[in-house]
Image (tube, rainbow, N blue to C red):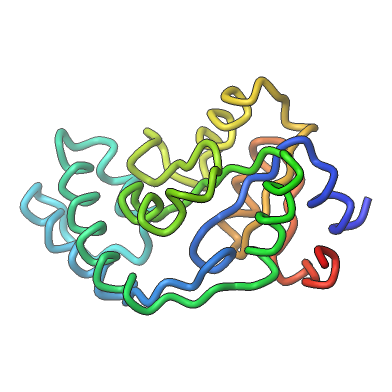
Length: 188
């Protein structure tokens, strides 16, 4: 089954946010640096190279995750004034929603950011990094979305833009479609 059919016909479509629906103007290197500085207060030495690294570390440290989420949300807020729409991803979401087909979001962004960008869209659920115990590529978020819709992995597709999204989908048993493989004209 090709990407067009997967995106249109899957019972549930799960979308990533940053890089799939919108490109946020966030300096991620600065975010990782800030999270690394916060972690030093808890005895961690070294710099994080990704959100996944930072949150994986925080799973083992009491109250560290809350501090990381707060700092990340603050830095994401700075980038929300200048976001760019990724038209093929947005068209796919709008097409599905207009036809009453379930669409959800699973992102490494914070729920605060997701609510500000997507709160009025009618996507369900919208899960940020602070809504799951274990961040992508762990499949927990996909499993929560499927459970919320009463569906199984074979009924869903994950649309994303990164290797983390692909690994998350594969681990959850869901087919992955890269946003670059989607064509705007499919939804006209």
